[in-house]
Amino acid sequence: MSVSLFSFLMSVGFSTVFILVIHVLRNQPIFLKSFGVHTLLTMYALCLCRMIFVIELPFTVPVELRGAFSQAYALMRSVQISTKHSSIGFMDVLLCIWIIPAVIIFIRFVWQECATRIKVLPYRRNKNYAAERALAKARNLSPRKLDVNVCVCQDIDTPMGFGLFHKWIFLPDEEYAKDELFYIMMHEYTHFCNRDGMVKLLTLLLCCVFWWNPAVYLLKKDVEQILEIKCDINATQDFNKKERLEYLLTIVQVLKGEPKAKGIKLPQTATGLFSRTEDDDIRERFALITKAAATVGLRYRAIFVGLAVLVTVFSYLFVFQPAFDPPVEDIYTDGANQEVMTDGASILQHLDSTYSLILNDGNTIPLTEEVSEIYIEAGYPVIKEGNK
Image (cartoon, rainbow, N blue to C red; front, side):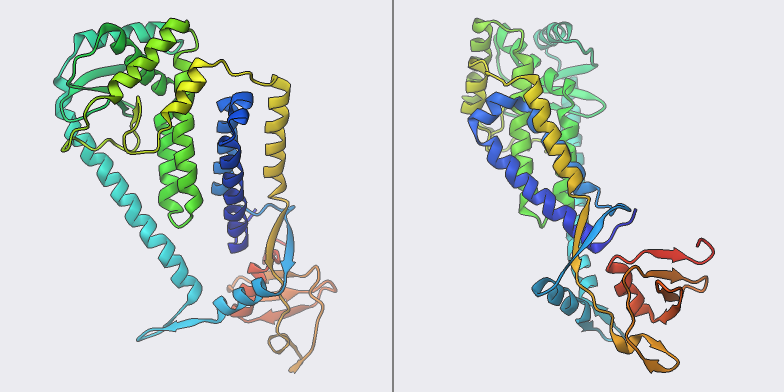
């Protein structure tokens, strides 16, 4: 297994197309109602795995492309940016343009999350015994028993759940009816049971790393909405029609609350009854709660997921890379230039970190460092001396 520029580009390209396909399917109401949120979340998981694991497997077949792709790659490798004491390759500049903003965005994200955590810490002393009783009722109805606490925060305008290890539910300083408190607690407790905070954290980290790819922001938006739909469905699965209606009315009642102009900004990893800042499609959530989804059979959902897995595995079978014709002037024998056949050749890395090209007939040809890098990036296998 190895990682190359081309396996990375293949991973980003495939996962981007995968995200767009999921987005199109996700916006088809019939698909979501038929296959359910778990099928979509499985596809999102496959997409995340494909984007993260950029490896090139031993059975991966290189597909050499000529024309514009090959010429563009050769041009980028040849461009050198001169500095006062040396020169920097254009590919290194692109890497810096990617890495430096990614680090800055990640640091900013961590800073904001820590700052919010520090701001809400003092509010943990503000008890609400009615909310604690409602939370205990929600915990008793759930198959999972988690250690979750609840408190009142005067500087927020919507209930939220926060914390991956120490879990807290923060309520606005407002009056809620007994039933409203139960439905709010049920929603937030279900978020914790579903580990939605961890899922949001992973998608946010993905946005930090691939900040230059618009598709990851589309993925983030879709995942957040799907998590809310999944939470609604799980929280209300044992409710009768009257209780479902009261659950929806609670969301409407909280939504009517006036947003606080100088309130605490909600953490990006927090979960809530709804979001005032993101494109939270309340109507879609209401429709899926009030109308029972006519889902297709488990067999058909398994077939669909199986096809998605096969497509993902298939994407590892090949990798696109520029066609490379070795420069004749850099391959020499007996002091004279000669053309050689490199099909099936491999690279030998000597103990002194120099390289040679091993041909099919067993002959070896010394390579310069620059030429050896081109061969390695073109997908030729590397054999370390002593391991042949």
